[in-house]
Image 1: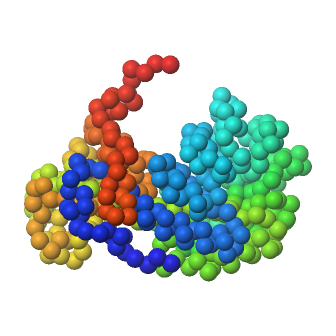
Image 2 (image 1 turned 90 degrees about the vertical axis):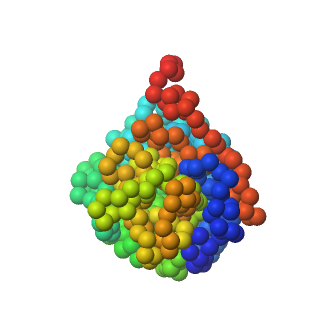
Image 3 (image 1 turned 180 degrees about the horizontal axis):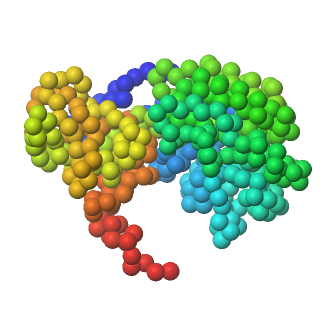
Length: 397
């Protein structure tokens, strides 16, 4: 297991490596992605499971060739991600789960996805026969009603009243023999940045609720949220869970992590625009925004690591330049005072950033670079005014 801290892969200081880049910008680390891939591939090899990239967390397809050797394919949350996985990781499996599918998109979806998972008996009844006729693997998402989240209710699919997945009570009322006959597999997704003890508890609940159904299935998808590549993650327990499911129910097992694929595999470079004070609070206003460029900082909430920041005596609240009063990244201690123009480098910025960012306040979308093994950077994407304006109008049809 890779137990290195988030910035251990940098060969030089942030200013030396990224000082020539216009900020703000993302820098994706190819070597770190491959290290994560090696860990995931090891799990797959030892257990016989298949591991997919959940594109909702990381969808920078320029780097899919770096990941493809280690993965069985991609997981999508809808039509566009399914098409992206089909086109950019050719020859690999494409799985899709969506809370509800659209009639006007479903036939196109069938062109890309090999596994289609439904969220309700009604959607299974409506689209399942068409998927089967097209030769696709058909699945249904289940809700084992076993919450393992602590403090992240927004990410808990097992919370009371959740719209995600079929409870056993709904199964008993809605799943007649004709619908069960359509199924090739079951899918559950209950975790969020968690260790394998949470998976073990969830798997016990799955067995308690659906253990009688599973022997009739070809596969079982454990979903995502497994922090497999995080230092200290209990991989042996994960592997026991996979083997148990395969041996007990005779199913093929899928995992679809997103964060684990690109964990600690990217950076976000910003510069200090201004320094202000309010009472005892020293504030550094950056050219980067939590609301626009790293939304999980506010939604999760999440505190990204900063290069060189720790228990230093010079504490600054790092903030964005937008009008949102809460556009605050967090408080960080530095060894020396910050000054205007200083480069601030955030770690673990490959996940839920480029795929979630936005142009609130007219903030520009940051450029995206790839970092190679020698410390060189390659531009992958650059954005400008046309990207901001074009998504707001002027493109009929």
